[in-house]
Amino acid sequence: MKILISEQVRLSARACTKGHSCLIENPDDLCQVVFCVNCKILGVLCNEEDFCTYKHTLEDRTCCTCPVRLEIYHKYNI
Image (cartoon, rainbow, N blue to C red; front, side, top):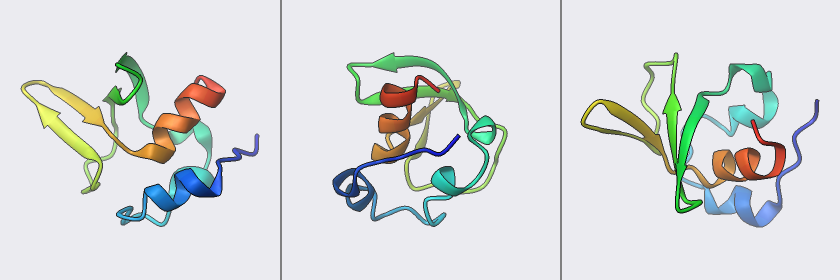
């Protein structure tokens, strides 16, 4: 499946240190979304321990604020 994200959203994630790999690699490899807060923050289960500008840990939860990942979730429900 090809994931299409608007250029505006892609540009808003300019702090991405991974080259927007979520758009290139297999969508099945994305962090799994377990909850969404106010349509702006995703609670995720992430297999990857690598640094990500948009990944934050709050207590025992991992949250994602990446604009690209948010649009993928809202547009494709993945």
